[in-house]
Structure formats: structure tokens, C-alpha cells
Length: 209
Image (cartoon, rainbow, N blue to C red):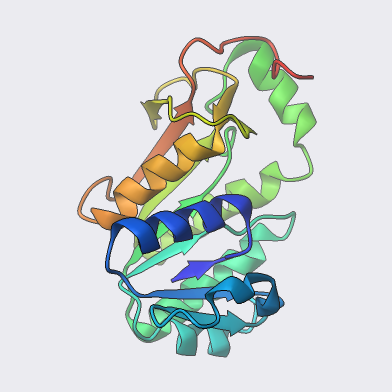
């Protein structure tokens, strides 16, 4: 099940899962007509709904083995609380979710200070989400990407929790590659928080600012 399924990375994940696996997908989003290209695909179920409608989320994830979240926004924690409640109701265990660099206070130096200011409105939601996910007892993988680019490349390195974040940017395709790897191999990266960046992009702020 993919929640926040209209997001750019969620759509890339969807395409890879359809093209490279035999998995069936439930795509949950507001205004499902935005993904009408899948309306006649017999491997896809589109669900139009509010992620805070926990009963609908729970009903929609009945057949899911892995929940992948591409949710975002200043109210991310409230959205994730609904997902976690639905997982508890349905006995679902495996969650892979997109977080942010800085969610674990792991970005050092001038870039860390710049990042704190640049996304100050969003970091509280990411940090509360970390607390909620850990407390929920689900088996999770938190993905903390650097600032995202649309470069047509897969080029990334990983940092683990407890290590300083490296780099300032990473391509969406790179993040999707990692997410796809975890979704299709759910026994890997269990209860892990992984930072992703493009090697050699260290700096005091994102290169395009």
C-alpha cells in the first residue's frame, strides 16, 4: 500500500513496482482521478480518501504486506498517527516511510544550521513522527534524504543513525531506488533510520540556493 500516492517519488515507486515485480498495489490519495492512468490496471486499487480517516485507511490496507508512506506537510505527525492506528487495528507490521534530513538532529555544521532554518516549519512534524513510529512498535525503515533533485541518476550513499549526515542533495530517482530495495526486501533495514545523499555534494547549503 502506498499512501500519499500522488507524490513524485511515490509515482516513481509505483512504476518500478509495476514494471519490475508482480506485486499488487493499493494507492491511497486525495482525488484519485489524478492517477487515472491506473484505473484499468488489474494490479492496482485506487482509494480516494483523507489519510486522517483511520477507518478508511484500515479498510484499504487489508491486503497489504508493506506500507510505504510518501506523506508530508506540517501536519505529518497527525497523518502518520492515523496510519499507525490503522496498522495497529489490522495487525500490519512493516512500514517504510520518507522522512527528512534533520529529523534525527543528525546534520552537522553550517549546513545543519542552514537546513534547520530552511525547513523550520516542517522539522517539528518529522521529529514527532519519528517518536510516534518508534513508540508504535511497528517494524520501520525511516528514509532521510538530502535536498531532492530531479536529476536522471541513481547515485547515493547511506548514513546510519548515529552518524553525521553527508552531502546536501540527492536525486529522487536515488531515493526511489533505495525505497524500492527495502519494499521488495522487507527483511532488510528493519528498525533502521537511513540518510541518503549524493557523494561529493558536501557544502554549507544546497547548491542551487
